[in-house]
Length: 365
Image (cartoon, rainbow, N blue to C red; front, top):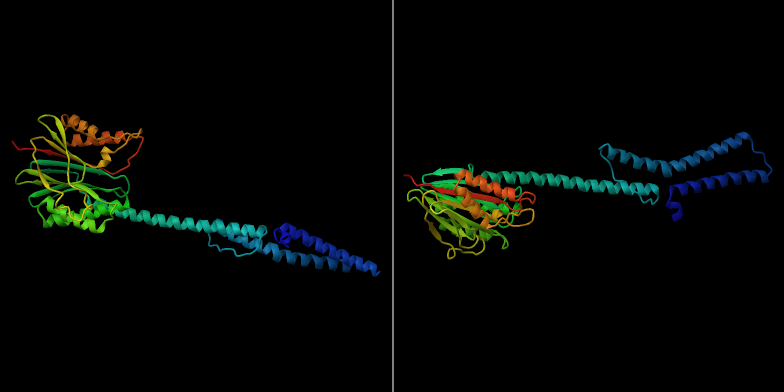
């Protein structure tokens, strides 16, 4: 029976043999009974058998095949198509199964494409929202202090956070780095930026701001994720710069008088690591002379890799600060450091978000 069901050709062969044997049996019957078969009777029998054969063949082969071909044509011409339901295991059944599998895969691909487009659209919106909360300008010229800050994310949503803004007679400059990058890092970055904005209106020093930001981040961020940060405060009345470190990278200070670049530990622990960081962070005054530079950066710079996998490193960054500080103004220092980091990564690509802030002390004479 399976021999008969598994092949249309076999089935056709069986039908032909059956009708051939049937016609032969009829002729033998007439010959045995010594009856004469007239031409008209012969033609009637042949036509009847032909119609019966064609009817069976149409129902069993042509019609099912036409159903498969119609659905295939609908698929090819991008028209609505239907799944083909059949239990056949012959060539027509194979074609129907193949059609069903192809359309199933196309449906899954179509869903994936739509879902991917939706996700890309949402990422674009999130990326735009993130850009909107970053500084609207990359320069700020305060009385006694000039600032330039720029950022280059590694993906649509960055994990670096930075800003500079004034509240009354104080200007806050901060840089932070969320573990990793991408969607999760971008969300934490956005949360931290919003919290800083709120608490800077309630408190007048970076210490209290970061203590309270830490409390809220710890409640809403997973244990494996945290945010390193350095927040500086420029007191315009006192012409004094102070900072609070929360486990971030070194603070680089270029002394114009000696041409030396010092690296200071920022101190503290990252935001979100402990429930209460009030005992492990502190505000520190930073004494600056005329033309001294202060450089803040994210680890996307020191951990940038060249084509050989070698890290850019802190020493190389300090050497560039010394080289360019003696030759260029504030914009030139920032531009050439950023360019050297970009050139260093050529052939390897950017693995992490990059943020660079350069500040210059300018004492009126």
